[in-house]
Image 1: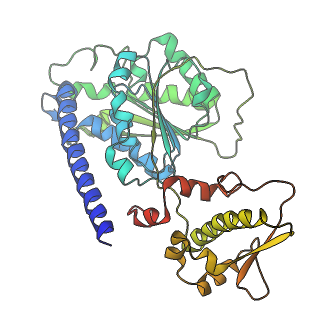
Image 2: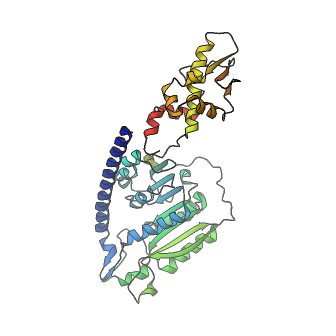
Image 3: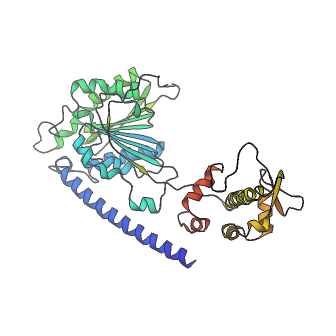
Amino acid sequence: MAKSNSTSWFLKKITVSCRKKMADAQIVLQKEAADSKTKEDYHGDVTFSPLLYQQRHSAVLEVIRKLQPTKVIDMGCGECQLLRKIKQKTMIEHLIGVDVDVTCLECSKFIIKPLISDHLLPVREKPMVVQLYEGSVADYDDRLSGADLVAFVEVIEHLNPEVLHKVPETIFGSMKPNCVIITTPNSEFNELFKDFKGFRHWDHKFEWTRQEFQSWCEKVTSMYPYTVKYSGVGLGPKGKEHLGHCTQIAEFYQKQEVNLEHESVAKCQPYKLIAEAVHPFKEKRLDSRQNILFEVEYYNRILANSLFTETDEDYVIVPLEKLLQFQKLSNICGNAEKLREVIKTCDVIQLNDGETAIVNQRQYDAEWSSDSDSDLPTEYIENKTEGSNEQIQEQIWD
């Protein structure tokens, strides 16, 4: 018990330290992001709280909360700030970030990696794979098919006309995700920015009014089986509500009555994998009954194999008391009566008439091996690999 308490205290101390460092790093990153977006969030007398990019991220995260997707793609992920937030969602099993800027992806590779605390105290029920790809939204890559949600956050306004023209077919015609979220600046809102001319960013190829954006979206829904609804973030000052939100948002949802099957086509993978990380998860632990049965089968086979080498009989018996001489089994079971009751719940283990021993039939089609676990259940092998039952009992993240 003292060892368990000591281990628990040590792990908790490390975890608290890791989380504190993570929080400190997050504050620094938020300040840096805020500084980089000063021109966007502070134009004359127009300010946004929270910052506009945070409001956009929150809008995407809210949709994720509602839909509970398992595969999410961030197209135009850039510095992976949105992807950093998405990867904290425990329901996600596959997260992909795509961008044409390979330098940006290389510099952001550390973001997709799990933290030390994720290994010490995993909270996921299933593993999560996070990948970064270099690629263009104009090109279809079949590894992106089957997504539950695709996010385009402030991306389409950076696209040249020839690339923008290919977006609907790539996303809605080939990838066919369940949901697509697109955000883009509302140019009508620009008049509220003092002494403002041109576009909000030097790389913007265009900025649409609400009508222009909605016309483009309606054209998409006329060509592909999706519905669309509109919203926005970044409200202006009182009395300027008629200008709409600073950022306009379109949410596309696949029509439920339509079965969008992915056609079997030749392998199409033009994207280049830049980085990949697999996040740990809480491995399924065996209950006490399963632990006892797996230990019984393991030690029973060792003893039975030894007895068969000493006799020509077609069966041998292994007394329950003999099994309890093994310390591991004795620790988790305790006595012969409990061992007997657990064994009686298992159809594949046969007791003798007096229920004091296990009856083992000779196997003629396959030789038993006392030093091999190859014929044992997968769950048992996994637990044997992890360590002794005593060690498993002490793991506090059980």
